[in-house]
Length: 130
Picture 1 (cartoon, one colour):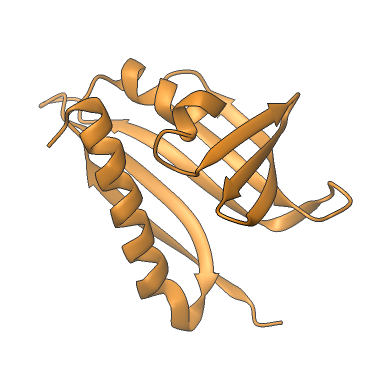
Picture 2: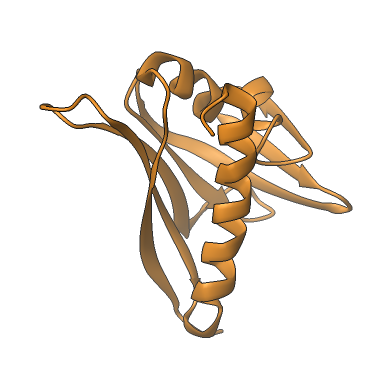
């Protein structure tokens, strides 16, 4: 299997960090823009898109700032891959942006970036940040 590469994308979002955090850290918030449905049991989250299902463990979170989900295998063991959603606030302007850290195969980074752009666009519409 090819090694995936890490990439980061930053999206400006017109929202309060507190509101944004609700949409990136809770199953109900994530199911409104990230996946068709999101269920959680303890630290494990199940993300459902159409007919596919992926499991991740909430590896870390800092209230109001960031969440990190580590993808797990069928035995619920951590893989080396994760995605992180980090809320950034500019100290001077107070502008808010969302930093996405994710992994993709080297030849699929553009496609994965496009997917994130679409999902973040949905998130922006949801919170009225367009």
